[in-house]
Length: 105
Image 1 (tube, rainbow, N blue to C red):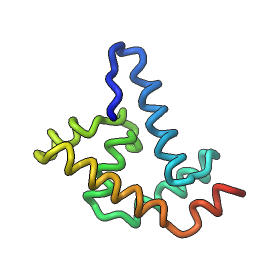
Image 2 (spheres, one colour):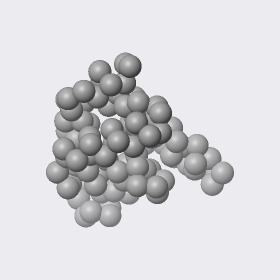
Image 3 (cartoon, rainbow, N blue to C red):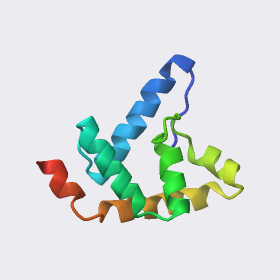
Image 4 (cartoon, rainbow, N blue to C red):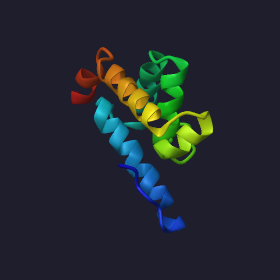
């Protein structure tokens, strides 16, 4: 389910929530220096399409996170296709060696 932003002042909060959701889903560390290393390494295992969707969806490139519909419209594909591809990318990230072990330390 996508979140609908009704007030421009809530946009940063929504983007932060999406980033936190992403981090919790793949088990990344909360320390900024360690986190950046983990994100770079984890995104490096994804193909360009998967990486692009994850970065756009969760706002990891410094831009606000986007809805599946916005990403789909941008790429000229269906929302369902973006959702499925995004879920595959998250599954692949969850299997990245060491993410969960590092986040427990």
